[in-house]
Amino acid sequence: MGSTSAENNSPEGVGRRDLIKRSAALGLITVPTMSFLSACASGGGDDKSDDKGTGKTSKDNPFGVKKGGGKLDVVVFKGGYGDDYAKAWEAAFDKKWGTKSAHTGTQEITGKLQPRFNGGNPPDIVDDSGAQQIKLDVLYKNGQLLDLAAVLDAPSIDDPSKKVRDTLIPGTLDPGLQGGKVVALNYIYTVWGLWYSGKLFKEKGWEVPKTWDDFLAICKDAKSQGIGGLAHQGKYPYYINVAIMDLIAKQGGLDAMKAIDNLDPKAFVGSDAAKAAIEAIYEVVEKGYLLAGTNGLTHTESQTRWNQYKAAFITCGSWLENEQLKQTPADFDMKFMPMPSLPGDKLPFEAIRAGSGEPFIIPAKAANLPEAQEFMRSMLSKEWSTLFAQKANSLTILKDGVSDGVQLRPGTQSTVEASKAAGDNSFNYLYPNWYSEMDVAIQNASNELMAKRIQPKEWLKRAQAAVDKAAKDPASKKNHRD
Image: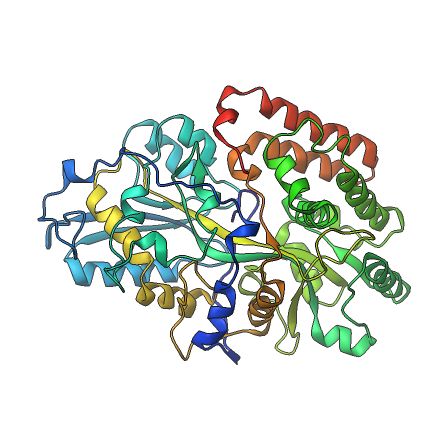
């Protein structure tokens, strides 16, 4: 999601067109650990499932779910992915175990759940996402998240000789780390970058821009024809930070990315990569290449105007196609592309931000821990991963997690191809999950920059101030990427 701001883990429905066979899904699985945080996070012994388990434990029932008598309280963020997939999961779970699942689909995660967490009666499993997400670092510091080590070390449903954690795409557990423990399962395999209409590009004779200069040239041509160059979701500056942070990582390489996550005193001020990136973004603003009015739009409003061919590009994650399903013309031909290259980039054009989003958590005080843990283990089975692909048409973090015959729409297909082209040139930031206050402060600075209320130099100062403030928190010493 990760996913920590605006509807940053969105998608709804998803159509079918290009057949994705298992071999295509495998293309995503080759993303190696080099580009992700390789911290070992087996967690510790906080698991309390056996205390409350009423069923007999076995290899097929490692958490002791009692057949025919259990309950399960599931709360799912109902954003772009909708919640039909969760209803399908719950039906499958109830059929297998004879449980009675209670389902809540909502965008008001904080509003509905904060009182329950405060009162000691949280749900059993939560998709903690969206603009009203309860911040993971806050929940963790308050001792309200279960260490998921027991789930990850349990036998895989598909291959009991393997642990669940060994069936996942490398690096995808990393965004769920807090203090060295995996306390959130980011379930959906996501890529972030630029999006465009294949139809519009064909009509205008535009080629996919591999350099920033080529990107600006298309924006200039679009402006001359009354079309915005870049639409951005102004009310949720999370989205423009996709572009800014991608440019920083590609310009300065993994070291520039790690400097931000590790709260380096020169993460922004004193970073040549950050300076080059923010000046590049500001050039779009200065030259008038933004879609008119885009600073005042929500994510869906901006994306819908883009669907109406009012802008050439938009930044987003791979939930975009599903989220915009109803607003996208049938022949729009949605396409994903990496962020274009700046001169002297250390990472190639094909490099993309890729990782896992949509954090699922089990509250430490969940009333039905055995059921919650078994439910999460089931999420990481091929059957449930395929159910998700069918209902939400996106890929999960499970290796080879899509059965033959599942089709994805053109935009999602293009993310598969981009991931294969990236190979080991992928990266992902962890600071949004580790330091939510810092993340919001940087977003606020970006909002000011896009509205021309501050200049790049001031943006760098504000971003660095947010880093320095986070570094003063003693808890930050527990988070580090090598």
